[in-house]
Image (cartoon, rainbow, N blue to C red; front, top):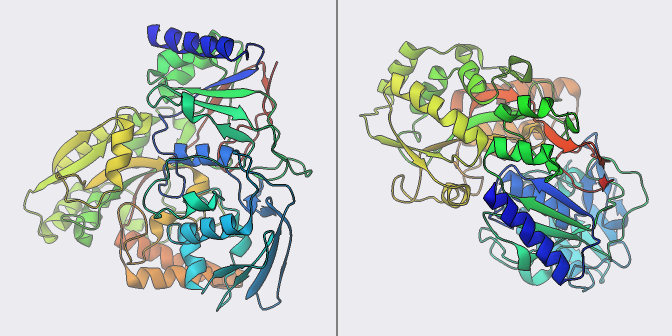
Length: 522
């Protein structure tokens, strides 16, 4: 409580010193602490949410996951799909006042194409951007790529956001430390206090589109002056702060705080994202034991989704066992290939582990008590793995250190890791081109865990090139069966994500990823 009082007092003093006492402030409890500012270098969900507020892209997904124009005024494409021409809207500016040109756009998209699964798909099709003038650029492809607009509007993975050219020239695996975009919110770096507070201000020169708001597309209208993310790791403290009106919005209340919030008359509990989320265990495919398919299969054979979901969610109405890599209930829902893994089988898991050649070497499990899902689920992972015969050691760090470690390819125990437990929003995993966890390409750029399966990647590419519903279904099932054999990701269940906000907050929208525009505070 002392910590929260200090943070709120600091905010009040800042407002007084700057003459901003009349500002309307939206105070948010984020799901974790913002440590990395670059939504191209990492796939951390909070960094992605941060990026969506301050940056824009050429397109954006609406509430049906359809790409809609955002930074572009118009575009054309040839009937063969091999050539595109894009014209930027007039008057677009970065937060520093500089004009956005095609140089910024091309440098940003070239960087993104080296990191994101969709971007790499575009690059593999020979995608090459060229500036015709400051507002017009072209995209040339050597072979058709059916997801150009969809990819350029992505709200998941590494975002296709437009940075200033000088930041976009940064090596794509090195996080950019400046956060100067052109979106409706402007990042206040001077007041950023990692571990405590992140501040955003309304961008006065932002030019919203005239179309109705829909998901991440259409008009993005900021209706308050300032937004503050206040880090409150204790879920009960955070819930009570919302109840007292010290906070306005909780991004993702921990399951154990929902009963507290439900008793508060001035608080609404609702959903602000479009799809349910997926929990999983990600093995590191670069090092023993999980560079061996049998060890990964042993981990999957021992797993009880029911145990994981009860530990994290508790309420059986809020989760389901799900054996679809692309989310149950989504357009790519299939459970093909999962039949042998739907019930935990310790004896089979022990046999598979023995066949892998595992000799009791230490397995390093990366975890963080600062993330509710990790805190709840890693003890279940330890218990189930020990029952099979894994020698598990937990590396429990603060959230920032966890993020920093999971992108490292160092040897486990010497800066690296063997596996971690986490989750993904449904929008991240619902589509086989956007779900970077099932990108099985062998170049080592496909996301922490780095699976490599040439045959599986061929099946994924075949799926992406289907043109009829029947062909898609057959290709989807074939790829999905391969995923359950290869186990790039061990599925641990699907759950509903809730947010909570004071009743004087209006305009919360549902989007693929959480969006803080169109919200007003009475």
